[in-house]
Amino acid sequence: MLYWMHLSRRDLVLQSPANDGALHGTFALRAPVRPNPIGTAIVRLIGLEPDGVLLVRGLDCVDGTPLLDLKPDRSLFTPIAPEQPGDRQIGD
Image (tube, rainbow, N blue to C red; front, side, top):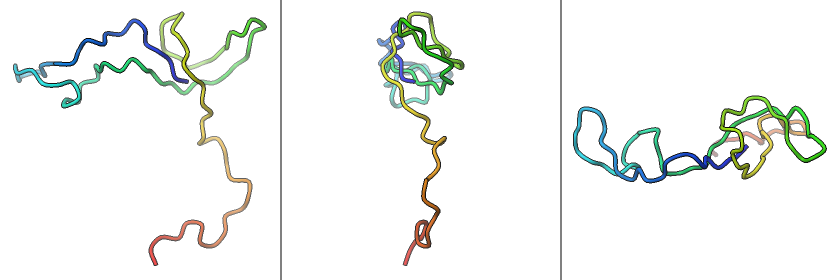
């Protein structure tokens, strides 16, 4: 699930890491606070209400957070055809 973190700050383009004191660009640091407000979560779809509301488990965001998109968890799908010789061939 992709969602828009509408309450998050997006003005932190410069930050000062601990024990440094100097300002650095946000993307030059490993800080978890980023100006990108797009959140992701792997959720379990429990159901769909008649008014179009999705019922999910495992979503950690504020009520009323705008939903951007739903994507299937591709790791749940297995190939239909059995593996053939050369499917995983590496090198010569």
